[in-house]
Image 1 (tube, rainbow, N blue to C red):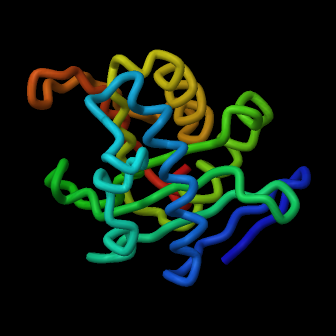
Image 2: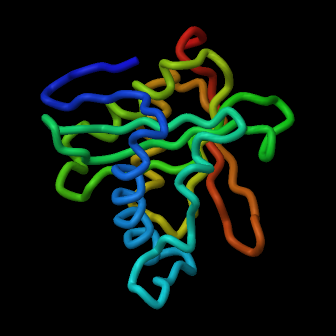
Length: 171
């Protein structure tokens, strides 16, 4: 499954794209280190914080965003059972290179991912990640036609925004 729009393309990828995902995860961890307790290892990498191959386990999916042939972002989706009794999908990790933020690439990638399933969706955002909260609120409200539930949950002493809504066929 893939889509191209405004020189951005989006596709669900398999494990053959683990190198691309690993490189983008390094940049993602760098950005997230501003809000979360994420440190580099002795080699200066963030690889201790993720196992790339686990992204595809237990029904997980990975999506890559590109501008032309250049990878510019990713989305990692996992079953949401860990967070909700309602099932559905959790947009576990999401990242767009800074250069491509505010270009529509993130909104288009999110819509592409959500259009893959009509099930319930969950997006979790750490409250300290202030730039992300309005992005997700606006993007989800637009996608769900305002039919979204937003609440704040304490997870290990940290506030997280939880946005839940129905997928493509329901909107």
